[in-house]
Image (cartoon, rainbow, N blue to C red; front, side, top):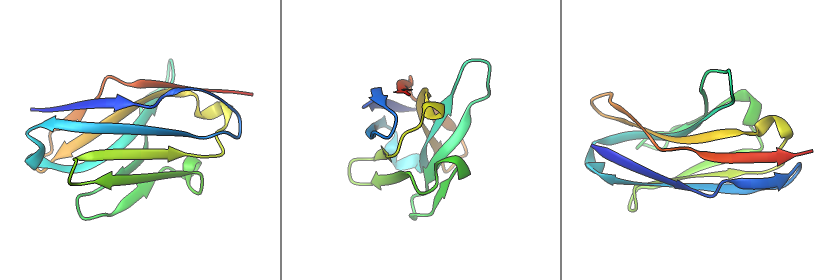
Length: 116
């Protein structure tokens, strides 16, 4: 079992920045991939960015050049630095992990609202 605790969401004006943090606890030795997804009402949850234990990173096209994902393996934490935020970035952001056994765990979600 892996537990994820997110922090850092909030309200920001367009063009501003926010930093999301997620700390994992529990059976952290099983974690391979850590990342962030987001979801808006009526839409499917979509991948924003993810980073493997080996450091391979993938971004959604919509956030490339604006968002940066990083990972602290010592703290089993993952971060999402969001810059040049746009109103369309407004969503609930979920921390996600995938274990080596391909089990997916989710955080509770944190609201990010970008005003125009």
